[in-house]
Structures are given as C-alpha cells and as structure tokens.
Image (cartoon, helix red, strand yellow):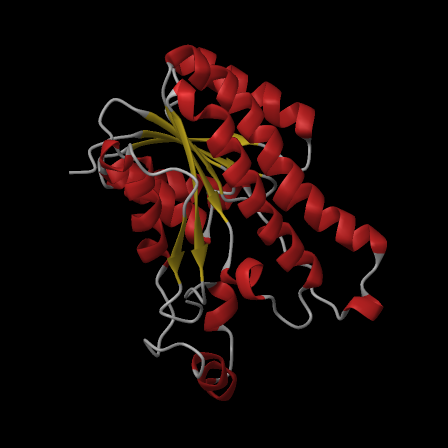
Length: 248
C-alpha cells in the first residue's frame, strides 16, 4: 500500500524538520522527491544524501516561498524537466511570535507572505501541470495552532487557519479535474525547537496532550504519505489531525 513508484513529489521547505522527514518517507515509497530550501544549502544537501543512502531519489532546488513569481517559475521548470508532477506538499513556513500589541506590520506580512501566499503560488503552478494530467495531490502542512489559536502567535495562527480555507476552496474547485487537496494539522512535533526546551517547559507543554508526548516528524510525514497515495483518492477537503488528541 501507499506505493508512489514512478511519481514525482515536490516538498517545499524540505531541508529539515517535517519537510525533510516527508521527503524521506515519500522517497521510501518510491517517489522521486524534489525538496526546496531557501538558504541553507548544506542542510538541503544532507537531506538529499539521507534519501539517497536509503536508495531513494531526491534533489534539492532553491526556492523562496515568499516569491510568488519564482515559485511558479520553479515548479513549472521542475515539472517540464521531470515530465510530471504528481504531488505538491506545501510545508515551507516561518513563525514570528509576539503578542498582538507588539506585532509589527512587516512581521505579520512576512509570515503571511511565506506561509499563505507562498503556498497559494505553489499550488497555482502545480494545478496547471496536474490539470493536464487529470490527476494530482496537494497537501498543506497547517498546524493545530490554526485550529485552536495560541497566545503570542497571532500571525502564525492566522496563516495556518487561512491555509485550511484555501485547502477547502481548492478541493471544491479542482475535484472534477482529478486533483485532491488536503491538509495535515500537526500538534507539538519533536523538532529542533521543542528539543531545546527545558524539562519544566516540556512537561508544561505536554499537559494538554492526551497521548502525553510530542510527535515525531516521521509520524506527520506518514500522514502526508497517505494523502498523496492512490489509497486516498476519495479523500479531499480534509484536515488530518496529527496532534495526539491536543485538539479534537
């Protein structure tokens, strides 16, 4: 099940964290993975090497998700060079945290530009390719914060909540073209950020998680793999929660 053999998947922000884990899992299922990075070429190279060590196929492409024209151009070039684009995973994102009274307009706009506008631009480019093929998968990496909010994360929550609206709209627009559009909404994930927390802060954070632990990035990636597979061909407009019961 979940075979992606012969398919091409593009993962934005694929050099670390959930993006890297997603690239690895999709490649393990047989996909040729193109992962994008914005500045850390070394990390992107390490992610590609990890995939190749596991006998997968991957390559890295530089892409600033905030650059709408660049996103459309890059995705069109990738699809033309590889002959197809079967799945797009919009994972690239940033967070600039502040209480709303201290939130600068430029920071708010930057978060929306990367997390929301970038995802829309990438989707627009991918849809053009997928419409010709009459099939395709788009998966947005949203967040539990987009569903329940979080103090000090107004900009991040707004961008991730908006992604869910975009997901549902695109799912309705392109279902007749064989394109499914879904999202995953991770809770606390074991990444560089959470691993740096003190034991006290970590314990406090996990109080609201019924499963009592953080997720691994691969657990989120497994949900993405399902949504990109043929087995999920009748699933669209759905937000799959990977949050340990934090929000139900």
